[in-house]
Image (cartoon, rainbow, N blue to C red):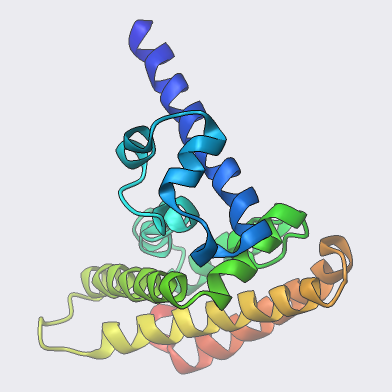
Length: 211
């Protein structure tokens, strides 16, 4: 019981620090805010911030970590008889329906502001690219497991890179339309159609992962 309360307090503190940091970053830019200033705004010590987030970048990109292994998990945990690509399509369409920020189809102002911050700040963009590379690597490992590919077989790696590139293109297009002023609800039908088209094209090129 005590442990559960402690974990809830930790979660609440992490979210509080992220919200405070986000407000400062949006107002003054990522490079214009220090860890000490975030601590002062949150009324905690600098060490408290660093205990929760090892770097300033982590205050922005930490939510990405929840998704880094997601495509690989979807492949490994798919239902019997479901192909890897069918499972990945199903998961992406479900995320679109929920307006998950990871799909780019989210018009909550704070979410959009932080996503734009990530894409416009070099230090954060490096972390986004690192996330994408690790996600592709994890997916490649899952593909290799399902096909029994030899360690020197590059097919799973190239297949994973194609899947991740298509997902990134879908996310980018959704984000572009939201940034242009369209609502997530208005973009949703086109986002679903684009996702289905993209996965149809993937299935043709990656037949081995579509059955």
